[in-house]
Length: 257
Length: 243
Image (tube, rainbow over all chains, first blue to last red):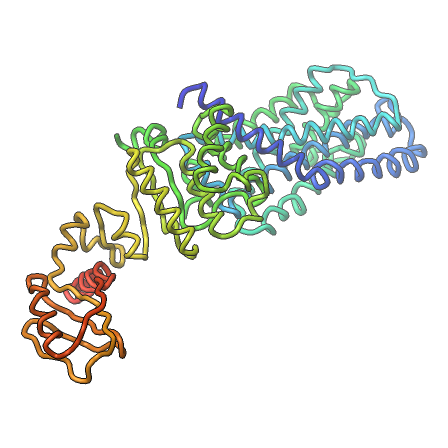
């Protein structure tokens, strides 16, 4: 297909994904907003007021970037895994597989849809956070790039999960047993500098730590890890997971009988 | 054109209506059609016009903006045909499109398929309804257990049938039927007789014999299972050979 027709196909998938996000907004946009409001009230205000400064910021200010990134990651992942698995389950993924569209257009369309949900939810959570504390974005470009890269990594991971999933339980397993523990241990609520060895070194193996800290650096200007390392880690994951996802699509794993 | 070497170009020429429903039940028929066109690189303005055209032709326009899950079974099948037409394919593959739909809808689908075929689209129809195949198809392939046991034109296939069966309506069937060489007569009920005879046998002698026995024929029709008989014969023959 030519570039122009690929663009039409890509636009079609993205529009369909965004229409889905908006159609079921009570499932896609409201729950994370409510959950994060509770986090801000309980951890930020009630408990946070008894905790001292962290890297020169109040506890509330410190956890806002982590919670925003956590929302972006979980919503990007959840969007693509449920949407693509839903298409597989309802068999309408076949609409795309029988079309002349390239596999990379399918992948990019779904990833763009998932990143869009991540960004919308992240923006909602950030707006809610402004009711609880003042924030001044230190590095807007780094903030934006870290959001897009972080959301892309987890969109790709969610896509791979959806490709392998055979039942709806399979798309809940990874978020429950992998994503949630890694997120909570990825420096959302604390600085890993507070941890002793070996937990500090072990924490450095957690990819979410780099995403949270890249975003925190963008917003607050502080980070537990070098910012260049954080971006390299995210880029490596984007390239690696894209290659895996495209390979799965071209081999028809989980898609063709 | 090789589908392996030129996949995109080849897929652009093909429309597919699978046997199983495979659209998003929560989307609207109009959106389903427009999105399908988008996957083929057709812009929204053109896609919207085509969606309207094919949804109208398949009598679904009044349901175009309702969720697809609210449509009846027959409507869902017609929606899949409308969707497959969005890229205006040169080859349309229909896998049992009329399975489980009522007679009226089946006839309207036949009419639509005949129309697009007359307009230049080649149609491959998979069906278990042999009456449907006999009415719609010029060429036929009979598949038994994944093996093609016959692949020819409908005309030449039907020509191989050397025996024909007629159903005769009579005011009252006689107790004893006349014996005629080359004709097997059977009483189906008090008002119907069936006559199985060679295609080369003339009908005049049959009517004369019946008339001489005091039997008046009020009407007559072909038994409409010609293809079915051939199908059974070919499949059984194939299985005997395989054994």
